[in-house]
Length: 556
View 1 (tube, rainbow, N blue to C red):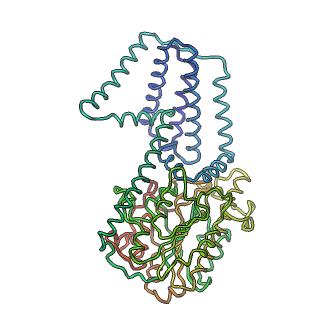
View 2 (spheres, rainbow, N blue to C red; view 1 turned 60 degrees about the vertical axis):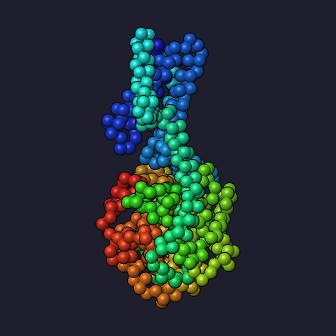
View 3 (cartoon, rainbow, N blue to C red; view 1 turned 120 degrees about the vertical axis):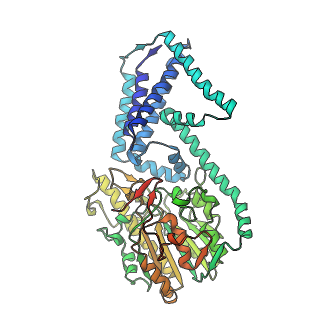
């Protein structure tokens, strides 16, 4: 058997990925290297059994080309998201609308670092085939045969355990697949597909049980003093408070929120919360917890078996409405779209998400056309596209107030004029969202209304490194959280206004949003916990906030 340059290149690519993977331990890196060598040696040993030279050459070329493609995918993910490709990444991809994927690729492949990476990587890969000189190492035939016998024995032992003791070797296969890049990509893709389809199917199948549970559990709501006419939740997208004037940013991109915070917008008042983060850095993962009783401490039970805000509000006598500027259909479905089915009325600006530009202002028209469905007590969700990639496509040209020359690059990993343009586009998304929020406030300012505005997650825009977008970093979860109350609300619910004022400085994570919203508006359930209610004097302000599963947020 002859080991050639393709053999060495396969090992080298996997080793480089392991070295560049953040938080990689030396022990795990050694395991990756061992599994990589073992895998490619097995492939070469099996190929050596064939006498068809043309087949061997083609198969070796296929293996190394697939390894190169998988290596590029991993490098791209590490550079932009601080992690190699995984099943979690696939979950996000499958819950994303096709138009969003296009915007995502346009944005990231247009960044200089990614273009340079692509060019260098492709050039190096081509060199492997262009350079004619090879480095052949010949392995003794007897050694190869002995090696294959040992491999066969190693495979038969777990198979025997499976047959005799009913212990399938899934964990061994999983570990092996995760450590060799050409196996990891299809394995992660398959695992992501199975996981996404499973939980969406389980949720759909659980609907009947949930309906039965609602009927059989009339005492679920332990107290219902809710008498506010309109309870409104505005869920933003990818909004970072670090780039908003209302939170201290140095450009005036939230003038209406500034006025509202001083009581100068329609007579109502906006209250700004200083220290709020999201539990995750992508939309689908955030919705695992945002509108139901799942949270970091209560994650053993799947989110779709937890009571959700829409059903509770219906039980409490509210008409429920979901208005969205995000497409309902993705590759396999997504949690926001699935949750929207629990509302009495669901309306989408573009249900297929195929329109080239649908700005959030369209939601105002959507509300005006459907408000005749509302009654004496209403719960309304506005789901914005907000500051989603691509930033330049999230606001009309008339809102392009800020330009690269206006951006202060201090503290940002800026390398070019193009980077400044990305930041200015992001800043302009807030200028437009500010106007949309003002018009939402305006529609409720003359009634007894409370409006909650928060973002699903934030964006890390050149703050940790030279990259912009989703990032499991402190910057990637620092979101705005603002409550607007009408003048009628302030007159009728002075106690609630005081509760809001008392909570403005408290540290909070939005996986407990439902734990706080319900008691504030006068509803408590069997699942409510006082220590998780930010508006309660018993709120646990020392709760550790873990985001993206394991990262603790300690503030800055």
